[in-house]
Length: 124
Image (cartoon, rainbow, N blue to C red):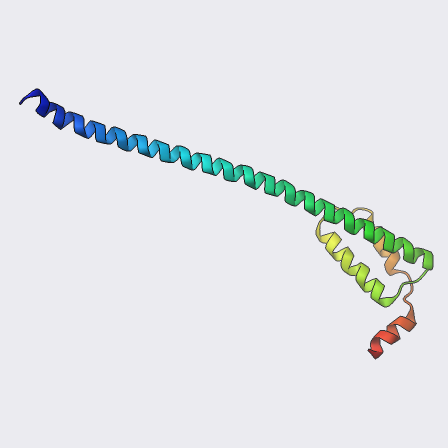
């Protein structure tokens, strides 16, 4: 056999397998880069989501405290306002870390309800 025949028998398959390995490695690097980009985007999105949840919880807490203090000063609550603050509390409570708001809620629920508002709501 001539040298060029040996080169064809050994060299061409080596070149083909080398190119195949090179293409596979490039594909794997591209895939890894894409996965890292997705991981970074996910981390940013999770941080933003947590910030939004904490901000919403802070706003709900502020609104609840304002409402509770208003009705503590009045000494009673209207039926609709009581339902509204209860709904706010449920959403606040679902976000976790409630602490002192449970005590405020218990005091608020102990306030008397304005009966004229209840009867007006039942007529509608």
